[in-house]
Length: 312
Ligand code: NDP
Image 1 (cartoon, rainbow, N blue to C red):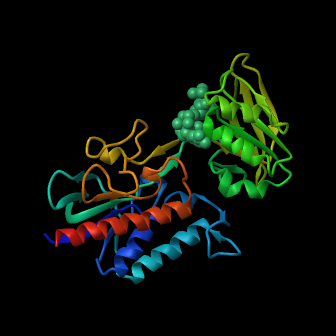
Image 2 (cartoon, protein in one colour):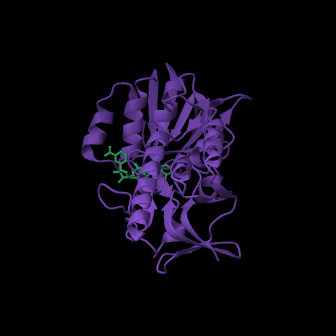
Image 3 (tube, helix red, strand yellow):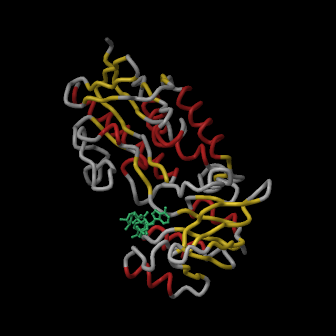
């Protein structure tokens, strides 16, 4: 069985950026376009509508179109793409082993770009109105809600940050919290409580997302103390209840942090195993942007290339 220079696992902005750089360095990378991690090949951007903040697209570009362009660019530089999930890895052997279906692949270096996924409420209508009022990224979609009523769900730091940020656009913002206290740090709580545009509604959960044919219009909510249900008229629902990195495959194989993100060495994309690198949201719970994922995917490839040169 042939040993490859580089296997890239994942096909979001990080994976394709790593592939473009690796292809141009004539490493002939093999990229696995996972079918299940994050929902589908292409990652989280496949679930986004318009992307207006990726440099180079002054008129904006649809998320799936951006991913399709990145894929074409990776293919132009001879990336071999396999549309299958990786089901097992073994980083304790050299070359590293990557298994997909019954097939085994070997590589001198591996870049992991399997991404993360937003946690969802799992209520009726949430998926149907995804991209049509429902979002999990204020930085990406806040701009579309100028002078609108936005509802944010969550009680952690992310929900506080999103709520504050979204008041730049919203005429009114309602923060729905399922308990009678916030989980967020005090400083973040204080900022939200001091923001005159934000109303906090306690002990309340969304039970259904309703709308017309084109967009979300109404949220059915329930007070979990009294059991009473009511409706909130809203234009946007931002779900900020945490993210889950796609790292099930790497449990026990690489060092992960408490929440499951891959730990990389400071100032590098190197994981706990030399020769294995991580780029994009799978190792980043802080920035989580397409452009930062593309940037760290590129960094991972440069780290891998230097590692390969050292091996020679
Ligand atoms: P967290 O896990 O910290 O918080 C999730 C919040 O969502 C909790 O309040 C939780 O409620 C609530 N929640 C979970 N499920 C549901 C549900 N089904 N319905 C309603 N509410 C729900 O996640 P975050 O994304 O906020 O933060 C992740 C990490 O990133 C944290 O360590 C955080 O500190 C950090 N972070 C830091 C920032 C900063 O410092 N600027 C900004 C953003 C994140 P409950 O309290 O009831 O469990």
